Length: 262
Image (cartoon, rainbow, N blue to C red):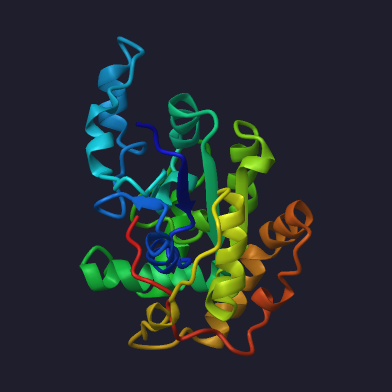
């Protein structure tokens, strides 16, 4: 048994909706639970480093395929972001296919903050929280945070460059949140093709509705647009995308696409 593909990010970008859609394909077995957090378990890998032989017996029981389910996959959004995950994944399966869904990093940051606030992990107002993150230098060198990485997780170009230093580009499939939300059938068809599977009907409409208590202000949106502009422009050059709409402060979103965790 070996896992064939991962939805490895980005958090708060629609990974729950994507996971739900993937589970509807008759030939795909997805993990239980959705997020196994196997490859970001630093303590586990550090304890195994002495033998240099990872123990995958804690990973494979999450998958229980039926005879018709020929490929295995899981969705843990932190894999794209967390140090050492991509190398660990490559060690496990060099042929692993990686699916990455990216949301406007400005809206992603606000969705992330709302989630952590609702969980009782964050008590600062949004603007104060992102300024604190900047002051602490989250994202510099190896300084990461599982909880308060509101800005750092949105630096997609940096993360993709790292992934492509380990995996070839043809083993990655990258899409926008808008594509899955607005064109689910076409988007899933392209994913099934990437996975070398026949097409299958899916349903995702009901998963894109998660209102926030308050919308992001235009002033904060503009502050984050200024912060993210270089990273977004870098991403555009890497993927040949047009992300100019992400930087428009006219209609900051009041909806989060899913309830994905970490």
